[in-house]
Length: 320
Ligand SMILES: Nc1nc2c(c(=O)[nH]1)N[C@H]1C(S)=C(S)[C@@H](COP(=O)(O)O)O[C@H]1N2
Ligand SMILES: [Mo]
Image (cartoon, rainbow, N blue to C red):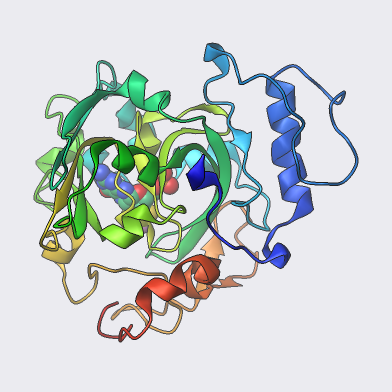
């Protein structure tokens, strides 16, 4: 498939160990144990696609792996931002179980030749699940390393054929008043809306996520489908998406609406542009212990090679 091809990632960015760990886990899920593990080399042996029950056992894609070990599954699913369920980090794990994730449809509309409402099951089968180990850097200066299961958003967008007027894309999160206790807080003008420029949306790194750690996505992480845009601050990656709209004009996004001087549209991870109230130069890795040293935040969260060209010539202090 064409979207497997794309980014030229320096081999220095690919850690054989992390690829191997992800690959081993995938093999174990398929019941192959150590049998099929050859020495060295990143190529996977040819084998049958995961059975339906193993839908979320995505095949590790060696083009999308970061150096660090993944954050523990428990931390990924209990330390969350999902304001629809409250503003404490523990609220989503406590309350998101009540969110109804089935039946679920995603409407893809706006500047497209073939608008269509997809059933979530069809989206899960639109392309083979891949496991991609991505960094997630929150604007609050903490971070995680997460093995997501999904595929490039571009795969879905190609199905609906964006028109030449499609310059931006908008992601709209579900609103379930009976099941989302955080909606009572009018911090955000619900629904939660995020957006990207169309070239950012088509970048192969931009991922539709359906699972994590080889399992269906927990509700608190944005089930049944969320996006992951790993070179941007976490708030750009909308959760529990029900609508995707392609537009000619830049969409008004939730955080830019609340505090435009703090959270602008681009929100590319940039250690050189501080948040008005704190530095963005370092980050705290969740799960690494209270006394663990903070780590330096990388330009574009370490994904510069794949994304910097999209921002050439732009004043990153102005378009932060
Ligand atoms: N709908 C919705 N999406 C959201 C948020 C939210 O409050 N509501 N929080 C964002 C923020 S600030 C971050 S850091 C990530 C956190 O994703 P995680 O909880 O899966 O780690 O989700 C983003 N997506
Ligand atoms: Mo965040």
